[in-house]
Image (cartoon, rainbow, N blue to C red; front, side, top):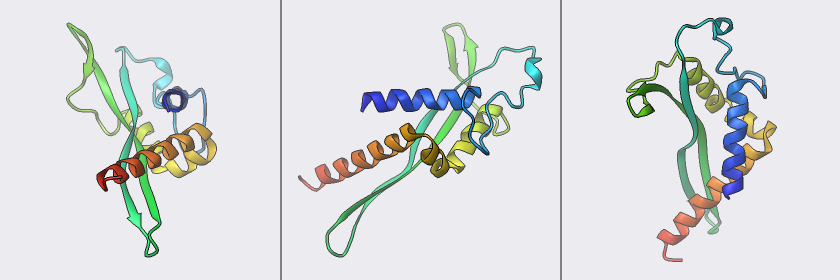
Length: 136
């Protein structure tokens, strides 16, 4: 599981920095104006489980469902180093990129096997939590 988490995060960083391109998903530097900005910029992105649950079919089959996405947060510098900014503008390139990955998550999992593996790990986890809650 740890390997999947690490590799999925690495693939997300490749998308973010433009090292890997997928149709309809901008890199965080596409709006960078050629790198001519005066201020240093930093942000972080992470995968999230947006919705999750288990459906039980009429014949007792357990069907886990998970909707995933990506969130981004601008970082600011302070006396102790980087910290989350209190607000990240939705027009920020990092936020736009995260929104594009979230909107096209199905396409991302089709083109990035490790993202599909991450989704399967999330489904397995949701099912395990459900079973524990049921006393199994």
